[in-house]
Amino acid sequence: MLGYARHNRRVIGYAVGVIALATVAFANTATAQGKAPSTSSARKSGGTSQIVFLGTGYPRPMPDRMGPAVAIVVNGTPYLVDAGVGLVRRAEEANRAGVKALTARNLRFAFITHLHSDHTIGLPDLITTPWIMGRDKPLELYGPPGISSMARHLREAYKEDNNIRVKGLEQQSSAGSEVNAYDVKPGVIYSDSNVRVTAFPVKHGAWKNAYGYRFETPDRIIVIGGDTSPSESILANCNGCDVLIHEVYTQLGYSRSTEAWQKYITSFHTSTKELAELATKARPKTLILYHQMYFGGPTDTEAVLLKEIRAGYKGRVVAAHDLDVY
Image 1 (tube, rainbow, N blue to C red):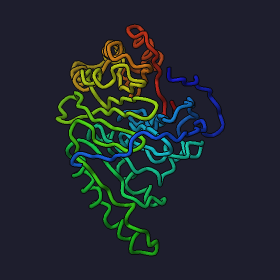
Image 2 (image 1 turned 60 degrees about the horizontal axis):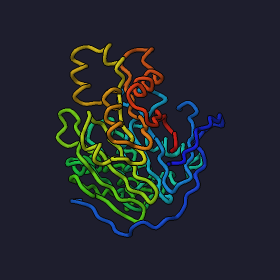
Image 3 (image 1 turned 135 degrees about the horizontal axis):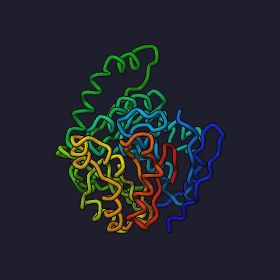
Image 4 (image 1 turned 90 degrees about the horizontal axis):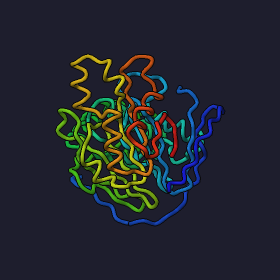
């Protein structure tokens, strides 16, 4: 059992619960291939690892949902999956509410699922702002082929800013502005004393390389599917995992979409019906929905989303909001 507490809504400016972090030894190797939202709810976990949702949205500009970004915090170290818009500010919001690991200068490890803009548009912020706020080591950035090129071009784009901050009156050290970017292939791509991270391929329309990630922490196995249509690799990497985090769109929204849009979303994404079938086979202890997509107008809601999922899936399922903690 995961032992999560049901969330308590607290209207005290920010509403992420204070998290107690335990110290647990796991492994001691490091490897890499190629190497104002509304008040949110808090769910507290008594284990070593925490999952903090820094963005649960999709490209539509929704003020209460930032772009896709999830932090897996283990023993005070955050590991980010994707870099949607608003990532760093959401992290600071969580920090001020008690998740101290998410102070900006701690944001050093990031894993990108694919190169769609809504999953990467926060990268300039992630590269620069934590450095300004005191990060003194490079950002370690992992992703599919192309991520190193993207990082290199972003560094070039902000070259003048970097020069002014290092050589001007601010006299900042340049170390924290650097990026070590790794184009990785499926397999184990990173391991340290807190986590072992495996990248696996998923289907996402015309993208040649799109990944999900499996995080093995001292107390949980957490699988994040990224953006994907139904993929068998999810089953193999979850297979009874503690937490499966998966994107989804409603059947209602699909039924009200144009034929062209229906063709697109079935190729790139996963419906509630498809996810119910997949989760039944994958058997996660908890299924968490993020990157929720609503295309059917004002009556296409979270309540509809959960009702559709539960019609075909009998396990525990919850819909994530920005700043939820599991």
